[in-house]
Amino acid sequence: MNSPLITLNNVSKRYRQLDALTSVSMSLNQGEVLGLFGHNGAGKTTMMKLILGVISPSQGEVIVMGGAPDSKEAWHLREKIGYLPENVSFYEQLTGLEVLTYFTKLKGFSGKDAKKYAISLLEQVGVAHAMKRQVKTYSKGMRQRLGLAQAFIGKPKLLLLDEPTVGLDPIATADFYKTVDQLKIQGTSVILCSHVLPGVEQHIDRALILSSGKVLAMGTLVELRNKANLPVAIKPSGLNGAVLEDIKLNGFFCKNTNSLKVPENKKMTVLKQLLSYDNLADIEVETASLERLYQYYLNLDPSLDLNSDSNNRTQRSTLEEAGK
Amino acid sequence: MSQILTVANKEFQDGLRNRWLVSITIIFAILSIGLTYFGAAASGSVGITSLSTTVASLASLAVFLIPLIALLLSYDSFVGEQESGTLLLLLTYPLSKTQLLLGKFIGQGGIIALATLLGFGASAILLYFQLGDSAVIQTFALFIASAILLGLSFTAIAYLISLSVSEKSKAAGFALITWFLFALAFDLALLALLVGIENGLTQQGLMQLMMLNPADIFRLVNLAGLDSSDVNGVLAIAINASLSQGQLFSILIAWVVLPLTLATFIFRKKTL
Image (cartoon, rainbow over all chains, first blue to last red; front, side, top):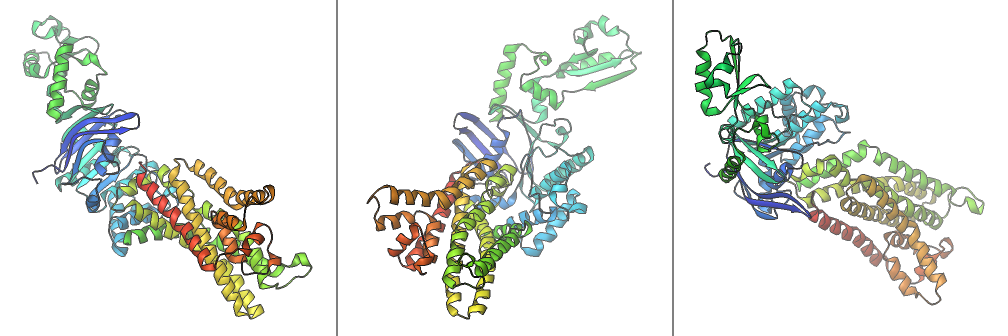
């Protein structure tokens, strides 16, 4: 229970000339949801493949549920792992039910049980109405749901989901996150890989940001926010330029967005000061979103920086230490 | 074992669904029944011809068709699933690469074997009722068994191709080349060696070279016992130095097992 479900120790993976991952260390506990973020080719899929045991690390060690996932002994553990690959197109000529029954059987269910179970899973993801139709007639969203049903087979202890919400409409996305939350309560650990950043933050416990095969940052969103020290955007209305005259406030004012950019630790002081104005009509407070955090750590948006450059560097390196 | 059967069952069902079984069976049945009746048309008579003429004509047609059909059926087995992403997914299941390969082989091999049995079996039954000779059953049993092995051998070769390339279209190209080399070019090369170089090739040497081609072994198995008047070309020479049927069958079986083993080896080394 106390030992982590997944541990990566200084793992590197090299494909001929390409360094797909360079000394990555991380761990994932039971019932934890980890968001894995990074640009295309950052090494997210490689990391998932390593955890799945489909490929072996060039260096370092991967431990999943107490063993190396690429060893023969780990095969029975695969019944407890669910995976949704990116861009999978299932056997087009088969019906949804046939596809899912096939995968259910391969997970170790027998004959009739497999079919019954497959139907219940299709009901869960909401494609039961189309289960007798060939997959080639499915929309992108339906295919994605079928893929999710496939990943949920056998109540996995560990779920690896590569772009799970691509092609899903907002309602289906909400349904999907509800399912993730439920699984989490049941003790399933989830690694969620996504490009769609808004909406993910409420559902992940920790985030890991990869870039070019290296871990840029890892931690809870609160930790990442604190370490990035990104400003909170405060937008008061009804003050009519009083902000510019206030010495306590005008240092934070940003003309472009017509709002105040305040460091996290000064937030309350500024808010109190703003509240002291009688003509304050409304106030909007926006903490750094996952998107801005992501951009910050990828160093793509230096304008968000409040700190000097050198300060920034040391912070990042301590973060990486913290990640290990 | 249950994993292998699950895969085999799925592949067999695919073969049924895609009408492979029906089409191959019909092709073989029409071919064999047609040849049984009209095989002697060239010599001026229509009707049931002699057993040896029938088998000789069947064998020389089957030797082109069976490899082509087997390659067509199986060339995209792995590369197709790799392109669609299901191969990667399957490998995250509690299913070993060997199990997946054997499952596919049993399923697709089953389609070929059943189609061969039904298609050629039809004309065996027809001939048996017309001639009333039990030699028919014996000869056809040999013919069908070797035809099945030939089909399985090219299924295994198709897997080799499917596992060695990364694109479906490339696999199709290689399958076509493979068919051309084994079914046509190989014999032409042998003939060229025989005719072009005086005393370049002994009868023994020719036999040994023919063992390098499963299609030629198939020919030898079926033509060795027939009247030499029905056989011509390189074979007529080779037959005189023939190995026993048992030996030929063993080599044909080796042509199934070896490519399959090699395919398993390549699959294990393959990274996705």
